[in-house]
Amino acid sequence: MEAQATEIVTENNTDRSISNQAVLRNQRESDTAMIIDSWLRSGLQYPIFATDVGRPPIRLRPPHGLLLSQNRNFLQKILTSSQVLVLADPEDEDHIIGWICTEMVNNGLPACLHFIFVKFNFRKMGMGKRLLRESGLPAECEVSWRTPALNFFKKNIFTWNPYRSWR
Image (cartoon, rainbow, N blue to C red; front, side, top):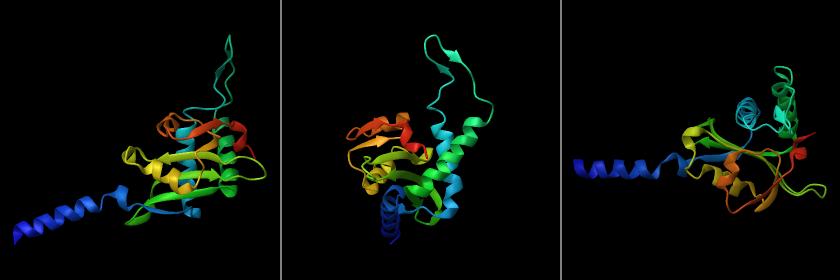
């Protein structure tokens, strides 16, 4: 009897891994702070405007906090005019595992992936691929923010257009 109970528990644990059970939902107002914070922390590691530009480099640094505050303003505008899907813990939908911000074809502009984010502990589990697939983006689209994570999506053809994020 004990052996049978152990087998059932073991079987249920493998079936309920978070990667198989994560809940996909639309963005809620309460998600905005986490989405903007994770976007800024990840995205500003690879800024569009680097401090050393050109040959020879022009080393003009922006005032402290300027990029952070201006990018926060950009992101708030992007989030209100884009589709944001959130991948959440099935037991607590307020616990965000990852998210994706996209725009479909609009006014003749091609579809755009603004940003995709998966928390560190949930990477390499197929979460990013699921978000990209569920977003409905075509395999060929524009990207407004570049990060090395985009290299993992080998079936997609991304064209960088930093101006898509400007509002």
